[in-house]
Image 1 (cartoon, rainbow, N blue to C red):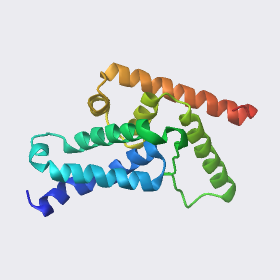
Image 2 (cartoon, rainbow, N blue to C red):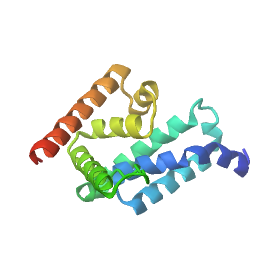
Image 3 (cartoon, rainbow, N blue to C red):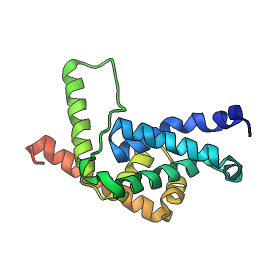
Image 4 (cartoon, rainbow, N blue to C red):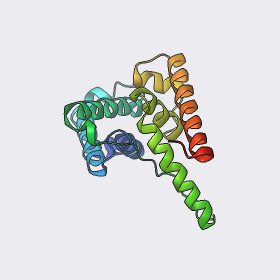
Length: 169
């Protein structure tokens, strides 16, 4: 496989790898390093990856495992979830402040979710993977993925509603 062929395969999902790494590691620098490591591993094992039907799903699984290993090794106490993918330039300042506040609260709420629920929400709601792909990436069955996602969404919804209605954290 030539370098150009490799880049044509890997580059379309490089940003997804970065976003998952950033979701898990929070630090932009750590996420960039993780993304670089994953791409380097893919490059070194390019003969093996051509056997995979879905290289993107394989790469996301590698990213998840790499980031979790990194978290286990040294930095778990310094990390948090931040979500800032939402932009709408046609809203009033008040609405923009409310949206940013809500996104900040969702990020805070997600910090308290179990690790599995965090990853399921990230992969389904942000990265838009289907349930089958998530199940393969996280080594779960589809029903477990759906249950984890449902519980995570319910927790986020309840805590966000309490925060907006009552100012309760």
